[in-house]
Image (cartoon, rainbow, N blue to C red; front, side):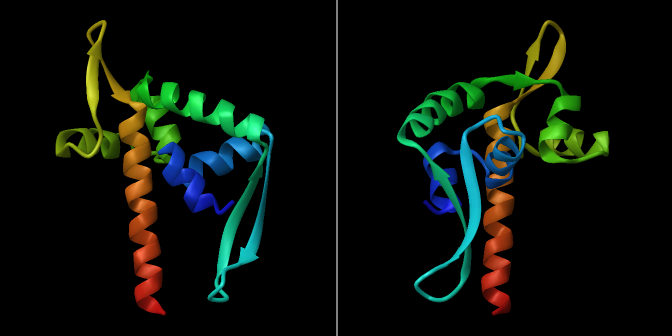
Length: 127
């Protein structure tokens, strides 16, 4: 299945799915293929059992909250000011847990998916 489709279905960014696969957290294989229009697309092979697990896990994962430090890791951002800016701008959702600001993982995934879509649209415009 195309990685884009799985990402949309689970509402989990392609970056996260690739990271999970690379770290062997999920049983999946990644490879490149050609679309009907002869464009390279990233594909992911997952069994029905793994897909069922991912559907349940992704829903729980999106509801989780993490520290700003963990949010930086998920976004692959080193600068802590960037996370604060994203929170202030409303690009990611934060909550207070035990007097500490935590970031909702689902909002991080939405942000990543929006960035991936913007990158794809820019690539399409360049062609």
